[in-house]
Amino acid sequence: MTPPFSRRAVLAAGTGAAVGLSLPAASAYAGGHATTRVRFTLNAQVLDGGEQVTSLILDTARLGRIDPAGLTTETFAVHAKATSPVPLSAGDVIFGEYDLDRTVTAARLDRRGNIVLDLSHGEGQSGAGTLGYIAGRGRNVVLDLTYTLTQRVPIPLRDHRSITITDFVQNRGLSDPEVDAFSSHVSGSGMKYRLYSPTGAHASRRGRRPLVVWLHGGGEGASLPDDYYDNETTLRANRGALGFATPEAQRIFGGAYVLAPQSTSAWMQDGPRFAPLIREIIDDVTRTNHVDHDRIYVAGCSNGGYMSMKMTTVYPTLFAASVPICGVVTSFPAGGAPLIPDSELARISTPSWLVASRDDTTVDPLANTVHAHELIPGSLMTLYDDVTWNGYRFSGHWSWIYVARNDPSIDGTRVWQWMAARRRGRA
Image (cartoon, rainbow, N blue to C red; front, side, top):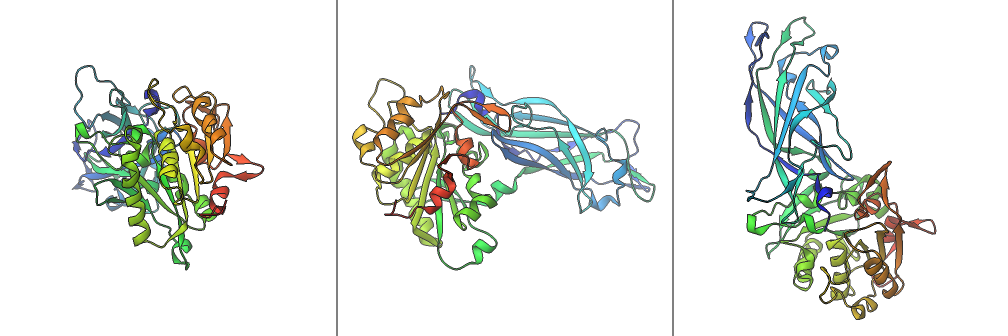
């Protein structure tokens, strides 16, 4: 449901390919001994606009005590290439591929003595994303990323020797602590999902904990014709699910499980069929974890905003609260029957807080969010003029950014606090 340009943040799984490089006019020895190959890892972070590779860590601690004063942004050149993980036919358009040099903004040592190369990144910056968006399929995919490193000058050691690395090997995958904190699972019916479990003090305290169910947008579903079902894009395309796993959210909810199922296509293609599949996962998670059955919440964006409302029509007593974001209730595309009829909206009894932006050109906020708000008894609504965060203006469809940052507020109460205060059967 997100416009193509919005999917420039592409999902990446590292290629793991070895890249052998010879360095002209540079010694390949350290203290008379040939240097061994050095492995490196891509570090990533999910920004509001999607995941980007923000730095590289080179496994150099074993090469000796590197003098950090000798590291500069010119010590290494970094080249990045991102390609589609699925075959593309003639005429297929994918947004997010690139083949370019990355700008190194800092070169430093971590506490283990490994070299860290910080890379230029930020909202709207090309050549940093880990996800690609295949327009004809309406799907995000994790791009195949290949990084090539070239050492330009020798690296000084504290004992006045120097080293030159001639062989770099990229580790597979990405290191993204927020994403990696979610475990991967498959339900009995074959639907994949990710699950965050409370940690630290929240994990050790007694009692049951709330469960937040995050339902992704249309771009984050599988592309089964391409045999592509990755259980990754749901977390990497935006901060929708990740927001509820942040320390701030965990403090507000008192430690919460966060569940992110991945559709085998798009929720709006068949909401009534997907509803029991999602319910099956919720039942599995509540059965095998310390979940408070009176504090199960559902939230989602776009396709997931529709599915959030649909779940409350199919299971009117399951959820303590619902937060549909830029959800669809009318026919989509236009001309058919409404996805959620007015009669169903009027019967929703789950406390609901709807969010959208007036400048959404993908899902008409008046015909969908405002219309649903007018029909859902006792519902709340936050309607923004546009989607701007930290000075950067995003597509008007991306109002989920505000919920992921706990920004919506009514009468001094923010949306996460409002959710956390709700109990099943009590508004």
